[in-house]
Amino acid sequence: MSFRITKLDGIVQFQITRPEIHNAVNHEVVDGFALFIEQLAQEDVQFGVVTGEGDKAFCSGGDLSVFHSLRTEQQALEIHERMATLLYKLATQPVPVIALVNGTAIGGGAEIASACDYRLVSQHARAGFVQGTLAITSGWGGTTFLQLKGIPYDKLLKFTTEAKPLPADELKDLGWATSVYSGDKWAAVADFVKQMKQLHPSVAKSYKTLLTTELRKPEVYERVLDEARMCAKLWELDAHHEAVDRFLARKK
Ligand SMILES: CC[C@@H](C(=O)O)C(=O)SCCNC(=O)CCNC(=O)[C@H](O)C(C)(C)COP(=O)(O)OP(=O)(O)OC[C@H]1O[C@@H](n2cnc3c(N)ncnc32)[C@H](O)[C@@H]1OP(=O)(O)O
Image (cartoon, rainbow, N blue to C red):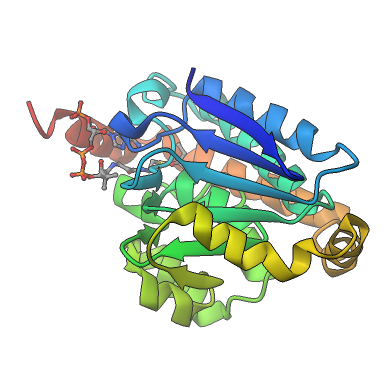
């Protein structure tokens, strides 16, 4: 199984369990995300947590060995639209979700974390929208989420266009990291939610609903789909397929 969902004390955790491949997203992980979002709707759930197994990686984005079989714009669009829709649902449903960025978060992995409400980032982690190195753009809504969550325009343009993972302190300066932790990742979550957990779950859900009013507008969902379309267009070009070929062949 490529993921694990557990529920403990009002917190539903979604963990990608593919540490050998830096927790890259395959079709099973996509299905797992859908299940996770369904579970957040249970009445007694107060927080959600998304993380990757092990201490090296949060998520390295789409599994290139799997998604490389998608050659055309239409084929790429199917997976991008599905992930973009799931992340839009995650961002707009009422339960606050913490991205526990325990290690590298790049490409689609950084987009997943960007759809969450909080990003707790390990001191040793790096994160970035590296899609540009593969001659594509973000395709799961990540850039739209970050702009609407208030990352300044010029900083966001540089972050996405440079396609370079940043260390934790720079992610904090950018406004991407909510906080930076060292030591045990679950202790970091427990510490972060300690004060909020003492209150009735409806408090956090109500504030998130209020603060995501803009995000829930239909035109925002349409823009997230535009982001998926933009990536799919670039996906079918030779420049992208050649860059992925180079990545997959680099150790052979
Ligand atoms: C598809 C959606 C799109 C989006 O819309 O956002 C994307 O997500 S595009 C994908 C973007 N992701 C990447 O480009 C990441 C590629 N991976 C890397 O750059 C590096 O692997 C790493 C994550 C920086 C880690 O480097 P390092 O510590 O040197 O480890 P290895 O490179 O040796 O990785 C171990 C193992 O894992 C495989 N791997 C890692 N990430 C992926 C991935 N995303 N897809 C497929 N395979 C991946 C890597 O190939 C190694 O495999 P082996 O060679 O078989 O050991």
